[in-house]
Image 1 (tube, rainbow, N blue to C red):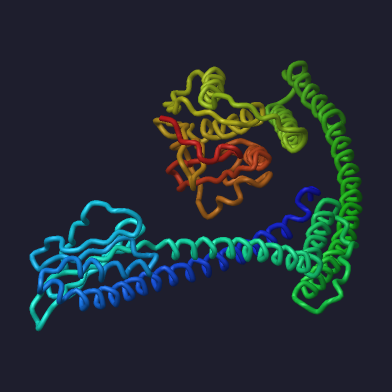
Image 2 (cartoon, rainbow, N blue to C red; image 1 turned 180 degrees about the horizontal axis):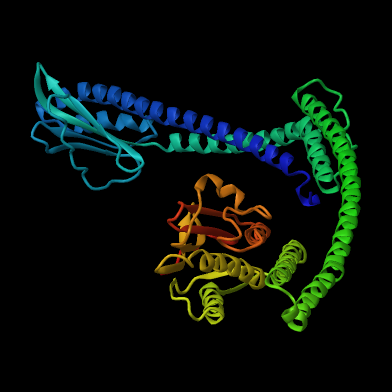
Length: 492
């Protein structure tokens, strides 16, 4: 954890305390000020209304007898009220009758209209307040009293409130700082130390560390105890995991040594099969051929048949040994995957089949544009085995057909080789991919029964799967997937 962030929680808490205190104080001052302004306005209107009533009562006689001087003397009494700027008495038809100015004479103020059904009205133009009240005598209107007053004392009082509020605000912030400092020592600093310890444990993976006690019994102390207990559990589990990991590594090393020894034995066995078994077979086949060539005229047909059977058996054994060696080879070595044209590879394999048996008439259908991400050498062995089987098992139908293409199978591209040959009983489909498993006799269709086992080993090494669908005498379809082709679309 960077050092610059060690006190981030304390700063946040300090700012929060100061913000809460400041907002509370501002709201309190705003509420108090709003209340004082409203109360002051009401009080001003009330006082002006009383003064207008008194002035109106004193000016009734002057209005009735047309004595403006007497009305002016009455208005001059407003000199005792320093807030009143000007006053006036109007006749019933709204004509000025008497005027009063506090400082100097000015224009005659216009008479605002009193709302209908009311005896007086008031307004607040700018920073002043204006009140107009009707003067009545025996229920009949005789005139109007106009008074205009300023509110300087209100604004002066508000200014004093602002000074007091500023002082209280500064004192509140100072108090919030002091409270935050106390809170930091009692609550924030233990949390900061706990966060630093958690970061240290996370980086160093040292679960033996523990947070120091806070000396209290509050929620922070509970948090520290829970964190220490968690570290203790992790330490125990980590120790058990490390012990199991060490044991597993030891077992893996032992198993690796065993597998290495087995692989060496397999290599030795392959070498022995390759050199020690095939050499005698070649001798048996060669000497049998010599006997037929050099002494064939001295042997009867029965003896020649025996020699030919010997040759056929040795050749079949040689083929079987070669297939076993191929099966052993595909399970070893690294796989180097590249992207290549699968359709072109199928075309190459079928061309070789046509060249080997030019008399066969087979209708081939190859879906173009199919690509794969795999080991080309091993995938070619897969195609050779599947296409060789399709070529072999379509030898009896009058019109042989072999097709290669791709479909989408559960979101994965599945390639297939389909033929209209002998097919097989679907009940025995699982036996196809076992070594030496055959569903047809040697006299009917020759073979060693190792090819499909080799196909399965190669597909499994690529992380895919292979399966077959068929009905007896109705052909067969072999499907296979390759790891890394998930989600590819079969191209037309």
